[in-house]
Length: 476
Image (cartoon, rainbow, N blue to C red; front, side, top):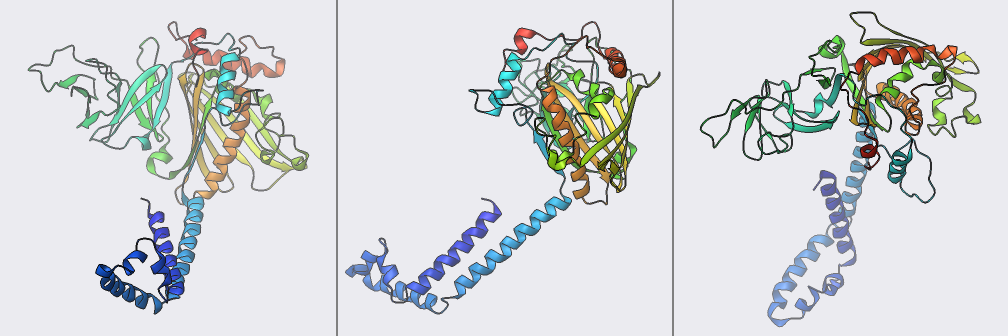
């Protein structure tokens, strides 16, 4: 039972006692109770019950209004505490916003009642297009560092793989193949961390996080040399546990950028948003080079909402968002990075509102990691964006904001919500569009073609491709 439930029990008890003391001075209420009234008229128990009855009435009658006063005081104090706690949460607690696939981005379909069902109908009926391979090569975040405490294990299914993620007693994160090679149990579900190893919950086979070798079989006299599982190359930084995925089994050719301000604690975690998106993974980072969409989709004022049918609301027509942007790929040895330089401001009747200018340097690091470092009138920080395929055409997009540690969470939360609302508008496009392999581009769209040539480096000969029958047969 939660603490607030105990408080209300005490308050209600005081009210009940007050009601009895006020209305039962003559004993009529107690006498009318079905479990007590008959006893008052039973010869054998009458004297005892009358004695108890007299004591209760005497005790209550002396403090008829005290119980109501206690109940009122407790109610006022508790309500005040709830209000204060709510305000403190708004000001200081990090934001945690999760947008599931059926939460937004779809319009009504006749005869379909729930948004979840609408999402599944669109997934089944939508033309996927001639999409590139569905799992590009690179580093991907598979879980937040905060979600894997020391000595705990988690099961994660992304990139068409099944991972067992755990944090050893040394505090280091490890990633192994989730399915035990012995009998197929998922060692990430119920597995026990032993030192820096993970023990299978089925038969107790224990695998080293360092190299995947089996180090203990409780009932075997000897551990065979072939007893091992796959150990995935991983690293940890910026609040993320990341794995290296490559269809050809090639070792990492580059490493993620670790932001020193986060590692040192100068910038602290202030919140997270998550969007589940029905699209091919390349569609999402491609937005960085699609400058024209900024001036159309993201120009209407944010308070006009995220439903694209209603964002041109005349009520907010005086306000608009202004974007100045340029995208380019970096040369070797940083050819895996694309850079977007962005300046954003809010305008009223074409004039910039003071303090609303935001300068952002965006680094797209491989196919799945983006660092958006910003400078604002209120301080500097970074949005850490991760993009990971949960299924071939189902992406998990997260944004975590890190800001000066001393700044209350309220301001960063407002910035993160604003970012989330702009993403919401994109989601309505992504969830319903088809992938066009040869788009009809004009001269001003040349950066889109340039981005596609840059992004092609993350695909290789054995990169998995979309299986149409399989993808369109499963509901979310």
